[in-house]
Image (cartoon, rainbow, N blue to C red; front, side, top):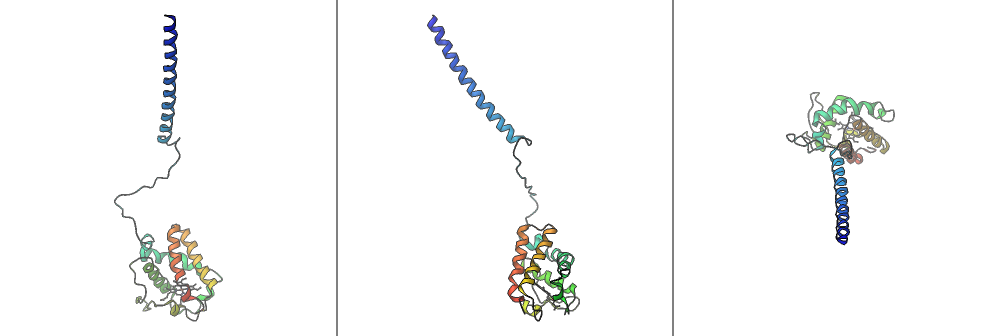
Length: 187
Ligand code: HEM
């Protein structure tokens, strides 16, 4: 009888221990589940909201607002900043076209190169100016050195960052400008 009692109390201790282990494990599981679900306790994960009926823009040009967005950016931000720079301004003396035409031809070229619908060159503007074809023809006789081209691109990048263009798109714009370096340098 006595041995039986000892035996069964040993069994009880065993069951109790198992029950306690189970409850510790489940409480731990619950707290981590709560932590994951609770916005205060959980680690913040960035939420990117997809708007299902808006198609993602596929070209850099469209993300920049096509010709109109690029033109407004050049006219109101990039070109004024370039003309305000004491190293670059002297290259813009004795223009053969108006600053307004430069902004339009430049915007069409950039839009075209970034996947937009503008024609790259040859367009007749209202002023009767016709956007020229080659970088060499446009910049001929201006003797623009490498350092000025580098600064020009840098200013465009800075201005784009200031108006909130994404780093990826800024890189794409800079790459297009960079491609023209050889045609502009020391002509
Ligand atoms: C980096 C890439 C560059 C591109 C893609 C570019 C493109 C253009 C375009 C499309 C025009 C208008 C041309 C037309 O009417 O058909 C233009 C004009 C002009 N660009 Fe650039 N340009 C670049 C860099 C520079 C730099 C670095 C300078 C000087 C520091 C410069 C100085 C000028 C000047 C002075 C004009 C007006 C030329 C004239 O009146 O005859 N450009 N550029």
